[in-house]
Image 1: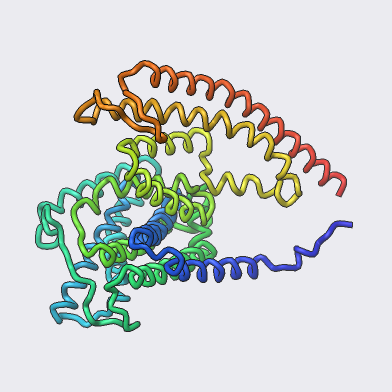
Image 2: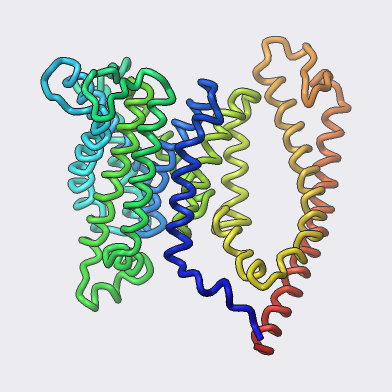
Length: 427
């Protein structure tokens, strides 16, 4: 007889418990990581999570690839900065805790306006329209200095004296509490939206717009509503960005933030709600970590993105969920030996690529290419043939043995699939 004890726990109870556990962990993190640098990372991660989830409302749930999502992120941020300045000037008594809502509402208006235009088309035409909108707003940043502040941007002081909580947000830990609170609320609302008829219809329009139209739903209106809501949450993220940094520049509405949020969402996985959360946390950490140790961090980002597109298009969350059936069947441990065998040559390949890239960057960017460079605590001259030979040998060996190891991984998966089918047949 099968053990069905675990089936007594309702999935809703499990999800609620996970949300509450995550909330406790999130709000306790500043007590564990007390340094300013750590709190700065946590602040950026919280903002990135909201931004990435808002983008996934377009890409993952609605099937809309946007190249201009930073427009709403930036517009919300600029409006939040102006809101802070108006509070400091005594124009409006808006509490600092509600300033992100001002940014979200402002972005929501432009999301509706641009959504009515852009969502008339889907797929590539939609992507090109959003690209044009992004470039339009980015160029307007220099044309409208009264709002965007020109090249210098717009700054503000978050210490307004008007608060609901009594916090003055002078310390990074207090700002983190604000970001964490908005992140938690936004995550819950965006998750609940996926369970509504709108969320279901967004999936339907993504998969088959003709059938959705046939049963009486307008794909244009469904896309427009989804586009507007995603702009709202992007504006909230922009408002939190404004409070965190107290300055906004034209860079915020440019192509780079749009590309970053695309990478976060895709690498995390667009097919699962928690995917963009994983991607936002990972990419934010890598940005801050790699930027401090190498000039080639953007190149590594590009390689990571290309690798995910080619070999793991479902993202990190997709890879995790791929193992769910094996885990439930108690067969996951059978995969570990093959994974360990693949990890070693994969690491060797990565090591060879890294040595090759770092040598090239040292020769290109160093003021004195003749000077020794250091890598992994080892000093050597980049112009010496030995490091070049070593990197090439590592890459060749890594590729050869990795391909062989992947054959073992496929065989392990075939064996697990056979065992699971046999178990179902026996059941």
